[in-house]
Length: 264
View 1 (cartoon, rainbow, N blue to C red):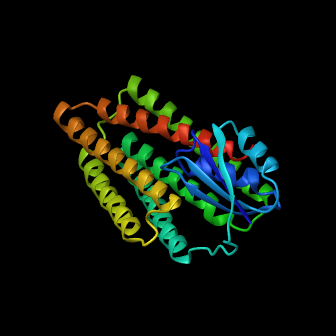
View 2: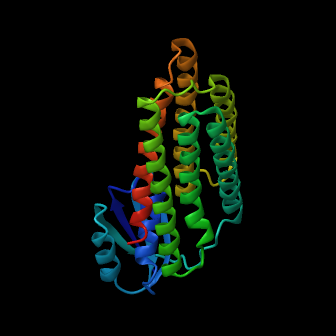
């Protein structure tokens, strides 16, 4: 068994990790892939030559470059079931708050809550692509990624159109108290996710670190919606809600394009 280390300069989240996994999925000589997203490193355990693997990594245009190849005695690679359970927990929390924030956002007329719910859904998609497609075929993984990406973009575009309609129309102010209360609960939920991930014995592994980065970003968005709710009340204007909604919708579309990369 050989161990080859690659530097992947543009690998900064699980979307790139999934892209690499699917690219190397059909190469029979690959025994295991070990990702270190924070340090932009990929370790490939493989038999035989590295040429085909190296060519596939370079073709992704993620700044892949081989650093070293050496022999290793490691031949067994076990899935960390505890890690998968933790990621399932985080996925469940994210999806539950997608439903909660989407519902309360529509009722309270808050685009900030609606946009934040889509951000929660985006995170669920990223985790789901990895978890639902484990052991599945490459075609199945690509189909899931394509459906998820286009669905996300469609929802975000509808959100943008609604923001424009409200910006130029004469709409009632969003319910600032609902915005603040629901966002506080979402903030607590994301705090619980961070706690779950931090308590994991495998928190130093790539998936867990990437998950913590995602959840930390969600905390920032939650705070943004809370601040927007306060400004809606103090200024008597819906503009702060529309601004935070626009920002988050843009982030959702950016994430959707990353997901669509997986379907190519």
